[in-house]
Length: 215
Ligand SMILES: [Fe+2]
Ligand SMILES: [Fe+2]
Image (cartoon, rainbow, N blue to C red; front, side):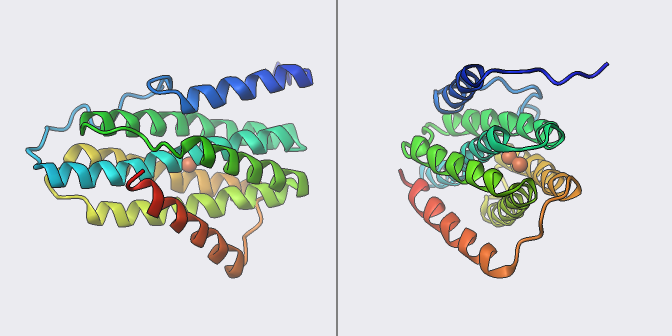
């Protein structure tokens, strides 16, 4: 029999803090699926290429930090347990993405963005605020965000050198997962956001991508 576990506000706070730490501390996310990059051959990349790919993967990693925070913020304020459960599967897959991107960044001799705590805080706040308005709005927000991520992934797949099959395999699997996340948020009753809201979100995403490519 499926029962909804009852957590006290303190339990919830501790769970949130635990997830935040696991998202932000290096090497702490445990993926449930092995990285798609594992079975792909290594490419001979020169320094400029490695630095460029690391920059792209750093953007994607921060995107995953934001996704994790968004799902956590939303779970905190979602009114219906059904909404929380529907999003749990997506949130779990974001942990995989986070770990895969971090592994790849390290392989390329770089590190995740120093701005991640800042973006975690902002996304958590936005997810929680959207959840406070209504479940429909917060699910719509998730769907719009995931669509945005798909667009970025498409751009990065274009930009990656053909030879870098490892990064490519990671982004391709993420692209499949994110499209599913968007669909499940809409299926769960998410609002389809109007164009001006989407434009605002893509401007915010621009700020994120411009800063984390380098920092
Ligand atoms: Fe993701
Ligand atoms: Fe996602």
